[in-house]
Image (cartoon, rainbow, N blue to C red; front, top):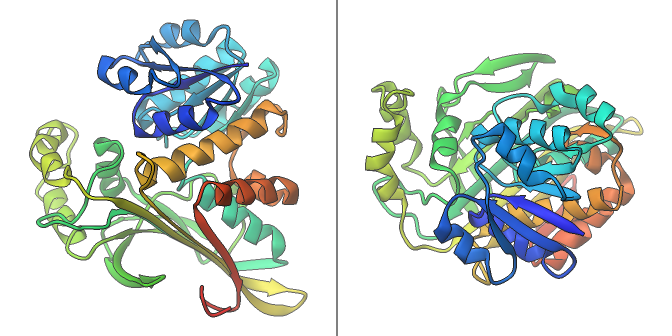
Length: 362
């Protein structure tokens, strides 16, 4: 079976590597350097993701496409997959709502699962499972971060994914549920301190709930992104001075991206927590995830790319219906959820569940 991975960056390379032993894997990109990096285990091919027609042409002849491109290319790629009549899983964190393409996908007999990375992705799958297990979910929280093990001043952060998508986290209003209602809040309005696992972080509310805003009902539902202390106040100042405006962002990244580009192993950490009732009793259900860089892959590439590869296999095996499917639906299905958790563990990613206690106390 032929599979096309769009994007030969860190995540796309991890997807292709994970799928290489079971599928005939091709990787599409415009960068000769990135394509060379995947040529040992996949067939490189030039693909221009900025052109809809080029995407459709590139997808013809494949039975599955995995999108691992920056967010600005995601929606176009999904539309191209529907036009080409090929199933797709996508990690791009596109600003548009892919659920708007549901009818088109169903008519074309195409399955699209979007946001299949780390967060959104695993975060949604875990929250979907918590919601399914509870009679009533009152509060749901996602705390998530991909961070360098060696935070270096002045910004205490290392870029392991799209720099523009990173900055967008600090500028795009964060959608949350508070008091049972949808609200949009300033992501950097409140910078708080939190302990997750054995670490202490600063954290800000982020716009990562996406499809959970429609599929999970709760009085309060929020995602908080984790950073090492000392990072967020600097980002807030830069934003307030106008450095993150669209007309300035390229110049800004020329200056600050090198400050966040250095050698340090990274790690990924996430806590997904739900509070509500089961059988009339109060219950707290949570999941804790931890992973570190290894085997030539950053941790962010591992938790994102390997998750996408696991879900790609589920789609190939027709484990999903036609249409556009958010990842939490996979978490709500006990058999699919069990498979995802088992395969995540097989890849050396630590994932623990607890009830009414913190990780390590149960």
